[in-house]
Image (cartoon, rainbow, N blue to C red; front, side):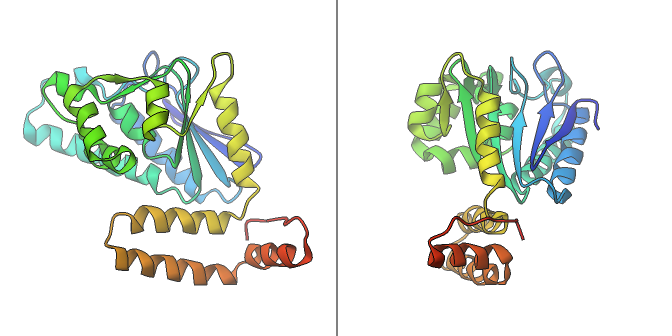
Length: 258
């Protein structure tokens, strides 16, 4: 268990919990712990779905600016490379992941949230890529993942202005998938959804994730090949047999994740 990130397991659902008060600012130590937690979650067979959570008050307010402010180009390049690599590792966890967002989700925090498959935000959350106000641009995937979520024009508006995005707008443009009403717990909502995915055919969910993520970043023909091969491979799983048996028998499928 890391000092600033820990992996918690409850049944078939895991939680990667950021814990660097007060704002979960992302520095080298947090990145190291996040890398380790992501690796453990990916390898842990008992975890079939995952929640990414920053706590009740904040998701993550971005990179540690005090750490970065005085660095030269040759010094900052390995720092941002490390952030990119660790965030991509989170994105590639072969399980359904849901980011549960309270409070500020800004800069590197928003870039991290976009590595999850789905994002649930509380009604009081604040999202944004304010790097432009520091004279820089997003560097840990924001210029790449945000346009893929909301489209290039909306991404340019958010990145060029550095403005904050409230949950209702974020849901409308596809930046978040669900806004949890005031008075309800966004973490519990994410856990409930994750339990539903954990009960599903995890090999098929994993295959869908790979096909969508990797296929969407390649040409159409390559994406079709990925889809075809993943589709065919699933016919070697017990869950495919169970799912089709249940359909034919008009029964409820009981998936085991094998």
